[in-house]
Length: 302
Image (tube, rainbow, N blue to C red; front, side, top):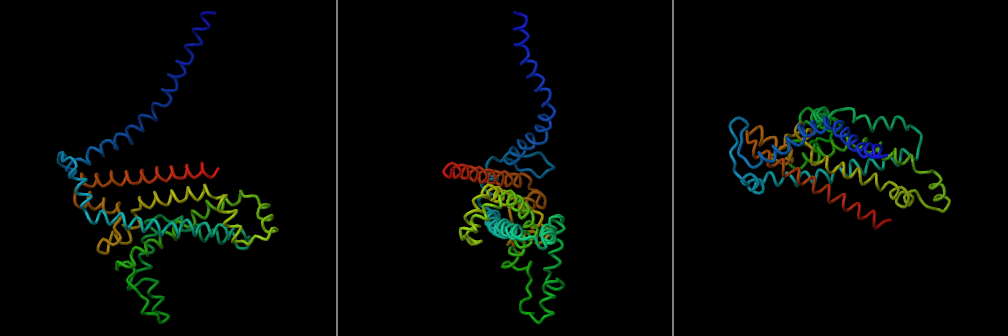
């Protein structure tokens, strides 16, 4: 009996050791490729470093410079405007299209393919394509306007401050609306049809059904899509880089493009790393606040 008790006590220890050996490779990879770069980035954020010479400790100088950098501060305003625009053109428009496609079967396959096909292109390819379309002299848009006698409407869309950011928002919406449409459409397919049939018998209009049935049942999907759009917006780089590279006159500068310019164009890797740390803190803080808010709203709701 005593021998059996000793064997039973040693079994959890052996099992724990086996689990540690099982997860050790994953933990080593996580430490080497996530934790170590993260800690080194935090260190370099407090240094003046050009990537070649030894880093020089400067304390909080990079962060003080960042909060006095008007272009850096304006880049957050630009990215907030970009996120607000994409929330309408991507999430809201994707939801509307999903509802329309769910309510009809005619041409469903064609419409789904049309809206989802831009997702096949990479952001770089989409940026190059639309930079050609929006070119002032040879672009398809201005050429079409001139061909029908609307020369006055032809604009240098990517070369003037008033339209460059709007053009990028439009291209981003064109690229991602189909992605959110598929998410919402998949969720809509799980809603029982008899709920809508009962609402129709009670005299509810399609608009009333949308706000009283569809939106409440898609609430979790909407919250996830909004979080994806916000965090993805702060990480936006390739579309801005390809189409305008932050121009004209820094009118489309976002944190990611300004970080790249400071770190690699100006060889100020210490300052660029500090800007990256600030961006990471902003994104994490917004994500935590948003998740906390949604959790509280769920508790109040239920």
